[in-house]
Amino acid sequence: MKKSAVLLIYTGGTIGMIKDPETDRLKAIDFELIYDHVPELKRFETEITCISTDEPIDSSEMLPSNWVDLSELIKEHYSTYDGFVILHGSDTMAYTASALSFLIQGTQKPIILTGSQLPIGTIRTDGRENLITAIEIASAKDKFNRSIVQEVAVYFEYSLYRGNRCSKISANQFEAFQSPNFPQLAVAGVNIAYNNEYLHRSSLQNPIFSNKLHSKIGLFKIYPGIPMESYKELFNIERLSAIVIETFGSGNAPANKTFQECLKKYIGEGGIVVNITQCNSGFVQQSAYATSAFLKKIGVISGRDLTTEAAVTKLMYLFDNLENKKEIIQLLKIDLCGEMTMIKNKE
Image 1 (cartoon, rainbow, N blue to C red):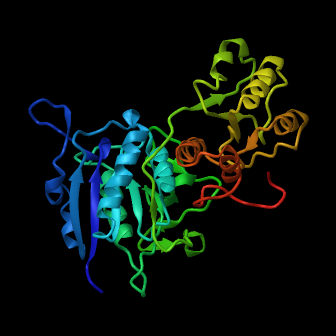
Image 2 (cartoon, rainbow, N blue to C red):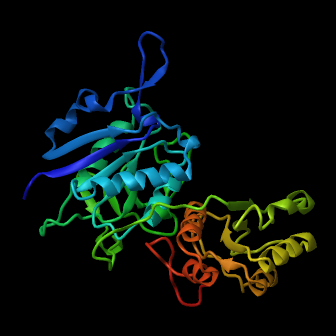
Image 3 (spheres, one colour):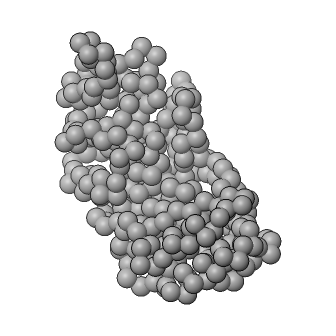
């Protein structure tokens, strides 16, 4: 087998920081000198090429346009490299991973996002292991010289997760991510144990790259006693094309007259509403209780077990790549790239 070639893309984030001895402040490292910072990479039988965005992007500043830029960058280099590793701030990493899973459908090569909780220049950093293992996964081939991982994934603290199935759950623990509704794709111990049964395989022969995302998507989290009069303007079809609502339990919402009127008016004017649960795990079932049955009756779409990140980015993708509203609704109800569990008797 020939040497695997991996493209390492640095966008910003804690992992790429070191402390400046003169100012005692954190600054971005030069990833052209990555072997100086992580000499263990020299032992890989992998050709590693490093590129960086023009300026490091704090992950809280990530925009849909940045996700499109990453998709275009991977498209440009797709035929040259066997795998891709994106270094990214952890705060919005799951959003970026979800967006890329829709923008790059049918990839037969690994696109692995990773980062760290501590800068790579810190003695106790988790960044070194995360980077090393992410590169190993991105370069891993089976006995037929095919990439073992063929999807967008997140690697963090010994675990590999499907990108559109995970969320950040801790601000201060190394185990910062979880994928409560879908098994880990791999666990890194002495060896990397791949969960082959759950690795995504596309029926597409070649990847389809998209370069458009629709930004007029809203997110609305319900809480007890919410003053709906203050939120009425959110349900404005001129401002938002679709809204994700985070409801209680299996998709329940209060029987608030103002809320119900807002939903009915918005949907009647052509808006799309997707219902996902605030719970870390489980499904939305809009027929389980009277309040959720009302949502189903007026046309709210069940988001099943979509994460918030996947629900928002899936809508962004669909609205700017399809013109037919009926087709958008149809595709919201099915699994496109592993983001949703399809089980009978689950809406």
